[in-house]
Length: 543
Image 1 (tube, rainbow, N blue to C red):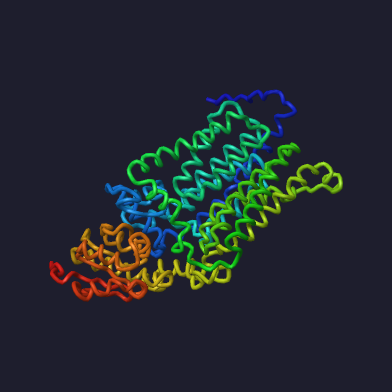
Image 2: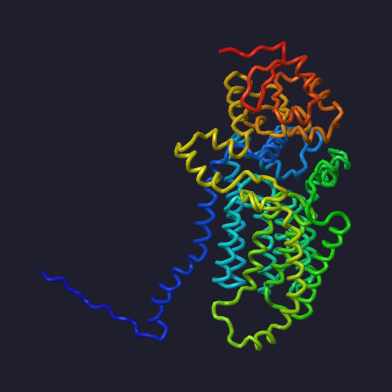
């Protein structure tokens, strides 16, 4: 029996009906404009999941956070100079997953990806696809490479996520005049306050966003009030309880006073110092504020001035510190990339440059003070240097590490091209020693033993699961807190730890412990620079 067929009746054609499939085909590839940046970021970060335990600040934060989550009072019973949110975040990772660099660096991979997503949101809506793709790829590469240590579990690597989304909310809302209500401003304030809970220097971002809200013609009084109230409220939620639990002077020293001590400002900076530096920074900030005010008065609608204000604020942090710390530059990557993308020419530049200049005269007048401020802040911020590029390292710091170690070295270590301990040593000679020492301690039943790590490297506390008995993990900070005339040794003597793990360089830098080691301890294990000293009245457990 033949099957009946029928020809479907086509709807009448309309002028728009035919091109629709072609349009959708053209739009489909364009919707993945962010993909090259995402791929670059992911690939460049792969070695970070294999990194050895070498960066001691990670261990200092994580060990302090672990002790806080175990019940110790921050800044009183256990000390660090970072806000509690970062310490607790790092401590929670090691509480949940142990001393895993992979877990720690997965956190910073996620925060970096979240920050880049905020950048994509801003760029696509405010700059157009081509400029947004260019800026996003540049930022993804800079944050993917280890140049600014963005892969490490340090405050700057985490705070970029809430800061970027606070900026995205404020800048996009104001530029698009979507200013109904005030909750969006409060949400931006909450995110900015979270960044402040990770690192004190986020006050620069907080101030930049406040200035934008203050001068933007679309912003209203309720917006700046909601933003300020959220920042103050969230910050007070952890500051006020700590003021009650610890003395105000103790909290002040940990979060602010420590940064002006000679122990922190140990380096001889190549740039301006003291009053000259302060004058330069005041001029930089004044120029940025002046540019923002000009943007309001002249009705500049281009969002580039807001990106520039944010970029200047983030660069002022390393400019003021004048320290060889590349991670100070991490929060500046996204705003600087957006600012530079904002001034890029379009893909079809105007063939009437004089007319374009006249039409954009207000924007050009605004750009002069902002550009001067941005360039000056960038020049001052060069003191931070870059990591893993010896020629760009500041003050000769970290000049022995290079990208050949980081990328080909990771591949060779993962595939057996050379031993893991050899790769660890290329990061830091203490890394393989700490690994071997921790393995010995765990194998001989010293997990959780009462111990003191007489080293600037705090990793053994985490690798061997040792409690922190001293006020803080790195030995150099104990010298700051307790004194450098034998007070730390007296504290160790009173604690009577079963184990003192002494590192060779720190025995030379802080030799006060040697008399106690000779009188009450004996060496039971060593691995290159690490020496495990056991109290004389104890013996190594046997199986």
